Every structure is written in structure tokens, then in C-alpha cells.
Image 1 (cartoon, helix red, strand yellow):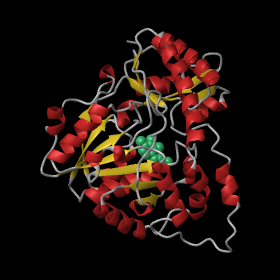
Image 2 (cartoon, helix red, strand yellow):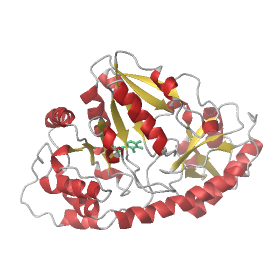
Image 3 (spheres, protein in one colour):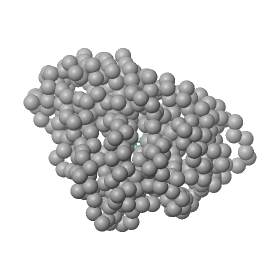
Image 4 (cartoon, protein in one colour):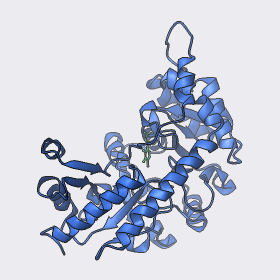
Length: 376
Ligand SMILES: *Cc1c(COP(=O)(O)O)cnc(C)c1O
């Protein structure tokens, strides 16, 4: 549908994928170009020493004292998700997740035959975590971990300290791990970036899924890591890491200067995303019947639209609608839920275009909502 619309000369504002439009720090390519070994061999499975040392230094910049041996580089955060889940769960075991949920978890759980048990969060509630009792009611003898994504994709939500403490309390009382996906750690618009590793009470049960993709705007580098103070978890992850041999050599070297001194860049992009968030939220709040929370992090938000079905609306945007030869592409949120029939009139917006383009895109969205025949 996108190709057809583009063939007709319609410009599509693509707000559907979390692929940053920003330029990564120039040291990344500069450092890769300095590589001067005659061969390009496998990197060691536990990572290139210089690279894992730079991750340790990176965590150190948040006051976290972790040894390089407790950090295993992975092929993106994606592989970190898979390895973390497989380290805690066997076939048929269960993980508690909060939905809407980043979809890779669903796919990897299916691959590994692990069951995800969802706790549903609501946009009307600003995606706040439910009570302790409600979360505990999902725990069975097969539950091995609780997964949190903080800041969150697809919601843009950031967990409060009491919410994190609630999850830690439950995990401790029920002997569970916490898999904490902190891919968007620095992209927070209020307060300071944080990590579950900063919580002393979570020391043995925290497993961090991390990635350079979003914080350095380089998803093509394919580098992430699993970090944990728990030595048994690290041994398990390392065994899996040995099976898949290694993480790209050049990128591991290239990322060293970025991890050693991350803040100048991450502060800059966080300010940029905040500006964009403000543009999008201000425009959405003026549209009748539209509801969104004010996201506190990452570069997404979920919007409830006055439409019959968001997937139909998106198809209509691509096939039937244009405003001055412009339309837009959004993500229907149904795919982010595990529970059937959730999120039917919600979309996710990824603000991965500059403020000027976002302003134009929001005008197009407003016109579309006025004209859509399935309006509610
Ligand atoms: C993008 C993303 C990842 C991982 O992405 P990679 O490019 O594989 O590093 C992990 N978790 C969340 C929530 C993400 O949005």
C-alpha cells in the first residue's frame, strides 16, 4: 500500500517504525576506520575486552559498579532479549509481561516455547502498573521472571520509583528474576536516567537488556548486551553466547569511544526528542475525540483515536486519503497486545521525524480524522 501511494506521488510521513532519523556520533565510523589488523576474525564470545570495559565505564557513569565480566555483548538488544529469556525459562515456563509490549518479546517467546502472561495496562491510566495483588494473581509455579521495559516502547511510559520497588518486592517474595529492558535509558524527559542495577535490593535478580541502537541512533550496528550481578545468569548467557560465536568485531571497536563518553550525545538527542514530543502532544490534544498520555520517555506514544478500527483507518490513510498529496503511516497497536481484541482504536506514533515535518504530519492527521468514514 505504501508503494502504491508513493507511485501516485503521495508523500507519506512515516511515523510507524522506531528507526531514528538522527545521525550517530561521528566517532563511531572514525574508530571503525582505525581498525588495522590484517584479518577480521571472530571476536571472543564474552566480547572484546576493550568493548566490555567501555560498557563497564558506561554503567559507571550512572554510579553502577559492574565488572566487564558481568556484561556479555549481544547482537543488538534483540539477541539480549532472547538470551535473557532463555537463561531464566525452560520450555513451557512463564514470564509476566505488561502489555502493550514490544513485539520482539512475543516472537522470541514463541521461538523458545516460553509463555508470556500479560498484565494489561491502559492508556486512560497513563499505563500505570496495577496493584501488587493484581500482578501477583498472574504468578504460577511456572513463573520465572517479570519483564519490564523502562522507558517503554510502545507506550513512552517511564516507571516511577515506587512502581519499580513494587516489582522488586513481588519478585523477591516469589523468587523471580526481573528482566529489565533499558534500551531507552537516557531518553527521559523528567528526572535522571536510571537502571534497575542501581537498586541494591534487586542485585541478585536483575537482568539488564541493553542496546546502543537508540541511544546512539545506530540500530544498524547490531550491538547490545546482557548485564547482571548474578554470576549464574552470566554463565548461562555466556554458554548461549558461545553457541552463536560472537558479536560484530568492527562495531565493538567502533562503539568504545561512544560508551566511554555517552552523555554529550545522549543529552543532545533527548532534548531533540522532547521538543518533538511537545509538538506531537500539543497537536493531538487539540484534536476532538483524541486521547493520549504525555509520554515521559523513549520516542513513542500511544494515541486513542475516534475511529472504528485503527488498522482500517491506517489502510484508508494509504489507499483513499491524502491532504495536499500528503498522508501518514502509523502502527496499529493491536499487535503490541497478547490479549485478543485489545487496542482496537489505538495507534502508536514514533516521533522519528523533525519538528517541522511532525507539525505537517499532525495537520494531515487532523484532516484525516475529520474525513474518515469510520469515524466514531
Ligand atoms: C529497539 C528495541 C530493542 C532492541 O533493538 P536492537 O536494535 O536489537 O538493539 C529492544 N527493546 C526495545 C524495547 C526496543 O524498542
